[in-house]
Image 1 (cartoon, rainbow, N blue to C red):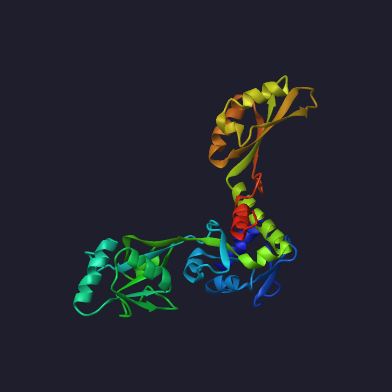
Image 2: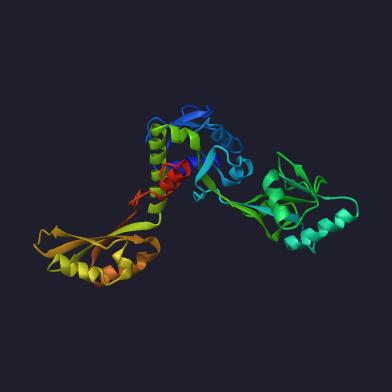
Length: 321
């Protein structure tokens, strides 16, 4: 998650400056007063829970496993769009009769009747236990590992595993297969915060608001493009009416039309609209059809809505609304 998180922050306009590659702290020049502390993904939730950090960027899987029920932390944004993976149940390829969690529940009963329990290797004991019980797999022993989990069945440490996967390649390389309905959790990068520290400090809450809004506005901007074309016409109203003839070219809230002072004295207007990326071809085709020339396309860096939905959710969690 380290490089992915730094890339994500940079893309959000908050590049982290780290004075030393071996140092544990850094800063964000765009947001004064923020100290960035580099920690292992597995430790970030605890740091935020304890109030040692006000906010944290962490894999949601780690948060879900390590959070304290009713504790100090709260999820601000659950899905940041990077580091996507799934926590899955995987069994040996040789278990040809095990395709679903119901099959695994039957095997657990068969093992228990012979005097032993299924052994499951994982780094996520809490999530694994809850998921298996929810699917009536009630007889098993957890083997909690800190290193690689995938080899555990082949070397005799466990019968099956519950582990993270993104592409599934490592599972297949270790002769394992996913159980069809065995997704215990879908995960990606998440933003979490400490309730107490933000509730008690207006200054820290204001800094948190800036970080949240930059992230939210940057992600929103990724869905849109700004399209501009020069269109001949007698009046702004005439050109606007032509532009409004296409749903795609109308954009987010309608086109902006302004006079272009042509050296030749022609009556030309600039039409600009913020459109959904998938509508680009249709929007350009429409602008061309109404005489649009010199069509240019650019991407907004941020798109701030009237209000930040993520910040409003945070305020609700803090009891400040």
